Structures are given as C-alpha cells and as structure tokens.
Image 1 (cartoon, rainbow, N blue to C red):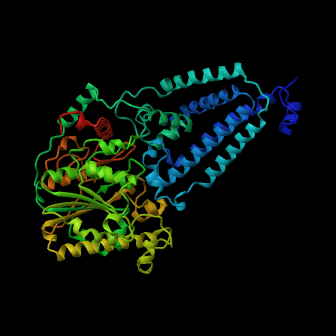
Image 2 (image 1 turned 90 degrees about the vertical axis):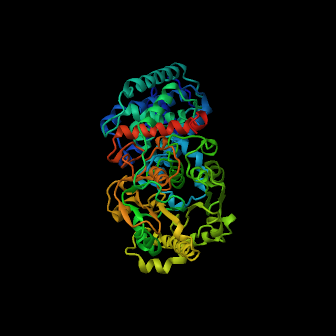
Image 3 (image 1 turned 180 degrees about the vertical axis):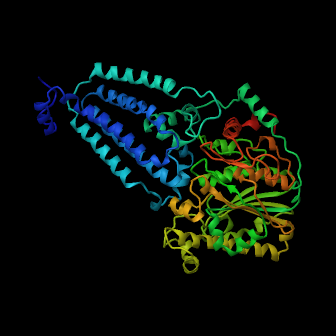
Length: 602
C-alpha cells in the first residue's frame, strides 16, 4: 500500500510504515490527540488539591476534554502538509504555556488564571519577582512531556500530506454537535439558587467566578472557551427584571439608627490600608499594637479576594461597599462609573477634604483616574509626596501637611512596605534586619523577612501617631487600620496556616480591622465582618448620608450581616449560600450597569 511519506521525512516513518502500513498515515494525529488529552488530565491531577467539586461531577464532565481534543485534531486533519505541522506545534505550545500559567497562578493566588485578570496584568507585572514564579515540579515535568509528545506528533506529520476531508469534517461536526449536547445535557440548567457543598455544575458554569471549581470540573479547554466567551461585549442596560430584583433587594434592607450612629460625627478620619500586615505580624509592631489595644477591634474580620490584584481588591471594596468585577470587566468601569456612595463622596458631601496617599505611581492599577472618579480630590504618589524611596512607609510622613489639610479632613493611606518580594537584599528588610532576627520567634520560610518589613510599616504608624499628638490633632481625629489581605508574600500557605492556627484557605483570610479615637473606649466587637462592611460601618459612625440598602455589606452595629462570603460563594458565619449568591449578583449588576448613572437613585 502506498503512503504519502517521502524519503526526507522522519526515519521512524519508514520503520512504522513497513510494520503498520494502515496505521502510519494517521499515527501523528493519534499521538496529537493523546497529547491534548493527557495535558488536561495531568493539570487536573497535579492541581487536585484545588478541587472544590465532587469527583462524580468531574468524571461526568470528562467528555468535554475528549471532545475538544477531537475538534482540535479534526482541524489538523483538514490542513495540508507543513501547515498541519505548524498548527500542531502551535496548539501544543500554546496549551502547554497556558497550563504553566495556571500552575503558577494556583500557587500565587489560590485560583486559576482567567483572561479577565489581564485588566490589571500590566500593573501586577510591575511588582513581579522570580521568587513568585513557583510551579509544582511534577506538573511542570508532565507539561513538558506532553509538549514533547505533541511536537513529536507534528514531526511525524508528512510534509506532503493532503487534507483528510472525510475524517476531518466528520470529526469537526461530531465534536461540535456533541460539545453543544454536553453543554445542555451534562451541565444542564441550574434550577435553584442553593446547592450542596460539592457545587452545582450548571450554576458554577454560568456564574464562572470560582476558577478552582470550574477548571477542575470542566478541564482546561472548556474552561478556556467559557473564559473567552465572557470577554464578548455584553449589554450594560438593566432589564426590567434586573431592575425589579435590585429594587426588591434594597427594599428588604432598611438601615435604622443605632447606639453607634454619629458617634464619630465631625471628627477627622485617617483610613490606613496596611499592605500584607497579617494578624501575627502585629506582635512585632509595638506602635500598631499600642493603637490596637486602645481601639474598637473587630475580632472576626476577613478580607476575601475576588480578583488577583489583592490590594486593589480590598481597596475598591472598602471605598465603595461593592465587590470588584470577579468575572472580568473593562477598566473604564472603575474609572468612569458613578459611585455616589464611595467614601470620599460621602465625606466631601459632609464638608470634608478627601485625599489619597500611596507610594506607587498614579498609573499603577490606574489609581490616579480611579481615585479621582471615586471622589478624591487628588491621589498623592511617592513622587508627589517627595519620598526618596517610595517603598519605605516611614517616608509617608513627607506628606503630613497634605494628609492633615483642611478644617475637616478624610485621608486614605495605603502602606507599601509589607509588600514582597521577601529577600535578603530587599532594602526594606535591610533597614530592620538585625532587629528582625533578634525578635523573630521562628526562622523558617520567609518569617524573618516578613517581620522586618512589618517593622518598617510600624515606624510609619509611630511617626504618624506622635505627630498627630504633638500637633493637637489626635483629640479630634479617628484613625482606622485594616489589612488588604493576609500575607501571601510568605509564598507558603501551609506555613501561614500553621502560624495562624487555621486549616482552610478561607479562614486564612482572617485579618485586622480596628478603629481608634481618643474618646472611644477600647472594646472588642465579635460580630463577623469583612471588607464590604467597612464603608457602611464608618458611614454609620460618622453619621454620613449613605444609601445603605444598595451596599453589598452591612453596618457592623446593625441587625444585618454578621457573616462573610468568599469568591466561591461559600459562607462563614450566619449567612446562607442563597444570601451570598444574591448579594454577589446585585453587586455585579450595580457595577456592570453603571446603576447610579442609569437611574435617578444618585
């Protein structure tokens, strides 16, 4: 039997064609198909620690992987000669690179990569360090092995091959039809809002916010298809049903004055977001610890992450009382939407000045345009403040006059020095290396480096409080501290959980939130709170005119709330899964539709 191999093709062709004359012409397609399937199975197996859905659902939805492999292989069969080789090589390389990205992401951010993350990718790259690029060796080895298999299959493809029309077209039609059937018959339609802990596949697919569940359930190819599908332009106009749903949500959430309403009215406010200062790090920060001991402390506070830009994630929630767009959105949503309930808007309406301060430039996370859109009069970067080194928090006091400007002021400060990378050479650590080594109770992992970085932030706290006291401003100024996220720059969650005495990633997100005012007696508030509760709590304490009903969180002193929900819709505290889904949906509608600009509620 003749076949299309030339003498110049791979020598293996000749041996295979002599032994398996019927199999040889399609061997490269078989190996290519196998490489595509094995790449997906290996990624899911090596990342099974991130699986949040039941094994039954994973196995039931496995056809997605086999069908996508069939579709990609069928396309190869329809291509001629060298074009087929190039296509097979490109598919192998792109799929392998994507798997590597997922492997790195799950270690860095505890979620898989999504194309929606590209919104702030450039800003995140500014903080990138090789120490963050950690991938499990077994996964990397498996990916390289599968890539080698697919590249080998490409070399086996005959240079003079003609398109295989019948099997190619048949494979394409069959795979597309079966993929559509799998979508509607295997996934189905979610009929209820509440689902069990293994996750309802239809809801998870439609919601597509829990990347861990979605990728381990669907496989990399269907996951990528669904992820790219979400990037298509969507209508921002609220439907009548959505508008009614928002109205019903708001009507069910009245806010009544309570014993804490207006307790801090008329006082200045300095709101400090502590970069990566975890609960245990406060033990090495005597100035911050002293403030905490004299504060109203929210002992059960959490900072759940919805997007990979961890600092901006919490920054946005605290300033707006809404959730960031976990499913991806244009930066214009943050820079152009109307936010009448944002903290700076509320304080300026009450006669305050409002300014924000951070060491990074205004272009990082688009903070300049975003803060201006939220209502801040100006965003002050390290350069604007005259900081010689924008990474050193102790130099934030260069802008003390601007921080305290105005008869009544609201100043939002984001610290920097808790930021990684944690290395011996980092200038932040070098300033406190000797003290950190002497004070640290343990030396494993990045513990000592974290202590050194915390000491630099503590120097800022000491200088700020001393200056406010010396200038007589502390009597009439409330100072609020909260962390933006737990310290994932430790790059070891097992160590983090051991230090904090917790055994889940959700509980690892327990962080500090406390409010200091000289005339406010120290107390502990045990009610569970999270980042979205900060704005309504402060609005109540300062007697601001906020639209509480449209905020995603609750005033900590109201009858509502008392729980935290994470980005996979699990709840901690008294809330139900149904409540978590509802709040996330309403917040998403408010943000995606630019609700306050569309309606007369502003």
